[in-house]
Length: 359
Length: 211
Image: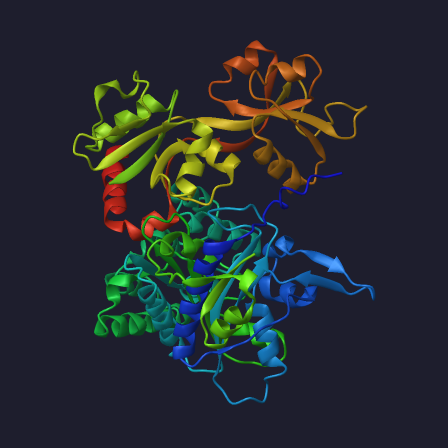
C-alpha cells in the first residue's frame, strides 16, 4: 500500500495561522472588488471540457485535468475562471442589464510544473467586466492598483501592452501561422539574435523588419508610445496606441503613472485576449502576481457578442509578499474547565465571546 | 543591487572578462576562490557561481536577476526567462551525430523501429524528434556521450559540438544540426520590470562591449 503521509505532487495543505492569513488576504481583496460594485459568482469546480478548451485555446489546453462521467461526457476540473464566467454571462445572464461586474475566488487546477509557490492546485481571485465601454480597461487597472495599495504593497509594477499593436503589424505581413508563432516565440523572450535569424528567411521589406526589430525595445514610459507612432501606420496598431496613451494619461492625472510600464513587446497569453494585456510584478518576487486583459471574442464563442475585460491575482504568490505585513488579529479565548459544567461556556458563547474548553 | 548568476567552468573566465569590459569588476580571485558569492567593487552587483545547467533556474525564480549561460542550457531547461543578448562567445552547435557514413534519412539500425538516442539533453532531443514525428528512445547520460554508439548502447547521440574533433576521433560525424548555441544574457521577467533602470543600464553597457 502507498504511504498517505505525503499529498500528491502539486497539492498542498494550509493549516491554522497560515490558513487564517490566507483568508484575511482573500477577504481584503474581495472587499476592494465589492467596493467597486463587483458581485461574487461561485461557479462549479468542474464543467464540460469544451467550455475550457474554447477559452484556453491550443497549447495550454493540455494542462486541463479531464475525466469522463457515467454518461460518457468529457468533463474537466476548472483550470481558470474566465471561460466559466464568460459562458454564464453569455447564457444565463444574457438579458441582464449591462455592464455586468463579477468577481470570483477559488482554486483552479492545471497539470503543470509547480513553480514559484504555485502548485497544480492554486488559488485565483479576480474580476470580470462584461458589456462596458473601452474605459472599463481603466476601471479594472485602477482596481488592481487599489488592491496592491490595500495590501500594503508599494513596489508593484503593471506591465501594460496590447495584442492589437503587434496584431496590426503582422496582419499586414500575411505570414503563415507557423512563422507568426516563431516570431512571437523570439519576441516573447526579447531574443534579438533569434529575431535576426528569423528575419533572414522572412519575405519582408526593410521597413517591416525595422518595425519587428524595434518591438522588443518598445517598453518604458509614455515616450515609448510616441516612438511606436513613428513606426506604424496601420489603423489597428494606431488605435491600440491611442488607447494606451489615453490610459497612461489618466494614470498620470491620478499620480499613478509610476506604477505603469508600457510594453508593446508583451504579446504572451491565452488565445482569447483581444485588446489590452497586462501583468503585474512586485519587487523581489520572480514571478508575476496578477495578469489580465481584454477578451471581447470569448463571450461570442458562447453565443453572446459582448466586450469583456478582467484580471486575476495569484493568491499563492501574493501571499509570499504580503502575509508578513498583513495584520492578523489574535482571538482571545476564555479557558473553561468543564468539570463545573458547560453552562459558563454556553453563556460566554451567547454573548459572542470565544471559549476554549479544558477537557 | 543586481544579482548575476554565472556558470562555473569554461564560461566563467569569458563571462568575467565581458563584465569587466562593461565596467563591472569583481575581486581577482573569483575564478580560483572556493567562495560562491562575490560583490563587485562598486557594490552594484553580486555574482553567484552555480552549475551551468542551474543558471536558468536561478534566473527564472528571481533568486538571480540576471544570468549568463549557453543557449543549449536555456533550451534544455525550458525556463521562462528573457534572453535579450547574444554575448558572442562560447559558440557551438547542438547536433545529432552517428557513426560515419550514415545519412540523416536512413534508419540507423534496420532491426530497431525506434532509434535509441543517448544525450545530456533529453528535452532538446525529444522536441527535435517530436517535431519530425520520429519515434525515439532517449537514453539520458551525463558524460562521455560519444561512447554510446561505439559500444552499441545507442544508435545516435545528441550533444554539443564545438570543433568536431572529439566526434572525429571517435569515428562519429554530425548527422544534422539542431541549433546553434552561444552565451546569452538571461533576465528574470519580474526583475526586468521592477528593477528596470539597473537592468537596462547593464544591457546597454554589455551591448557596447560586444559590438
